[in-house]
Length: 212
Image (cartoon, rainbow, N blue to C red):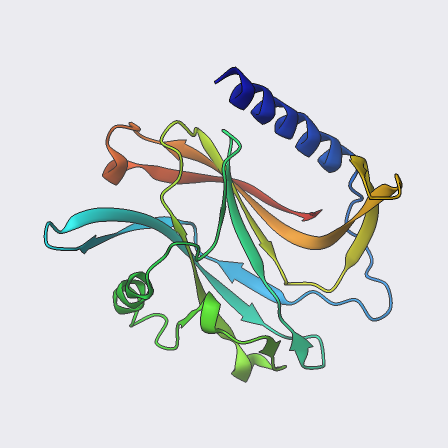
């Protein structure tokens, strides 16, 4: 257990170093840089009951609406992570049954009749409001001890940066370069009793753009 704690502490320190060294997104985009219009719902729960015992599996999801007003069709390679203040990182869609998306689609059929699963959304967004996409981003339930979570959505911009890793070296002893993308960060606090997962709610704090 001591080794695990030490490893976790090292990871936290390293993550902090990388964040400290990371550049800020440009206030005025450079020539050729774009960022799509994005709206989002705040994360909410959904429960899937599966198997002979109908065991409940809990998931969280948000619906992201993207409109490409950049003036050209763009490539779309998203990465969406949920990170708790206990330093657990959950990639979207990992370990999520397709059935969960079908439940979400049924729940929001009236407002989002053309809702797509992020995993099947394709890697190209056509320009214009007629090609707006509504995407469901889904994560498994997070750590019960968490008091806050951050949602990171990358792929909404082509702005990138390269920074030097503060610790890691390559086989030649040279500092490793880290590739960063302009990423939307959404911050929430966890409200409710952790023992009563069905009553938990995420309270919106703020949003910002970061390089991650």
